[in-house]
Image (cartoon, rainbow, N blue to C red; front, side):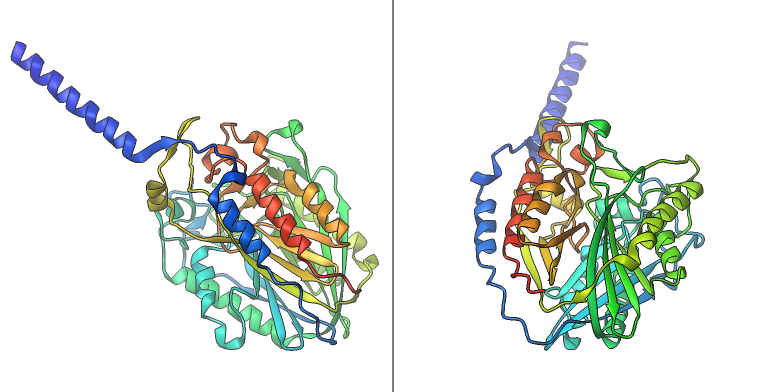
Length: 456
């Protein structure tokens, strides 16, 4: 009996040692170092300082073209987000999905703006653009990527453990298919380039977006932002951003859909006022659609019709003017090592995070078109952070549109004061430690400061 008890205690001791060793290998204390003291921040400031001054623009005005390409593949895929769909493939099409592209040309310079009806622009797709359109003059240095962030689009585009949780089992055909559709849209848009004018307007909205993170305790960016493009021949297009998530349709829908934003774009093009409407997710972090109905179909129609109504009521009155300058800045965004929390004070060690999530370099970018400037982020960027950044833009006499999902992904970036909350956005999806809201905002403001002087 004594021998059996001794053996049991020895086994328990070994198990305890193994568990402690495993915990030590896989977990560590959270890094609370102020980002301003960290090496990655100093590295970022150097990169920001090295952005050259705006070059002298050619005398020609900017020409603009646009195009859309259907994104449905000739094969089935899981639906992204897949987390509650169990890897099942879509079994129909509720409403179709598209890639929409704009090309801006001035002299020998050209820039593409892309929005896709996808959860994000997957890094597996972004990497392909190091080469896929190189001969045609496009690569990651002159393409500005955005997504609508629909949660009911094609998946199977990320080859990692967590990527498969979000997008289903990886299928190498999917990134290639997405890249081909984007390439086709860009090239068609370039062929359609013609002299054009642009204008900007923003409109406050009511009962269309809520703070889903902290509700009435937080801020809400309710502004609907609209860029109007008008070719000399009379054709018109719109680029629209808004902060409400495209999350009306949930896991019980097994059909492909572009969610409320897709329905809204269809309504706008059918109106006869707009030849192509393009939507890009704005600062959707912390922001969700206002729930007017528990019925998903009714809710989608509510969001689409009410957002579309604001655009249509005001579109004709948006003044336009020729654009005399354009520039895209593409800046690496350096981060602390990943700090995904499993408890209040413990995080996964970086090697394990990278094993589960993949290890991707992310970047920030700005696209200036005259007095309009887009700022692209590799995350669900929170609308609670927009006001100070917008203030910097206003001092430069610029109209700012912040977009999420620019081709990389680092989780959610929220207001730092909510970091300790045990919520989906702040803990589950807050992958790189505290203060990222302040840090990213500071660098975006610095990039906007680098913008050229508005001449028109």
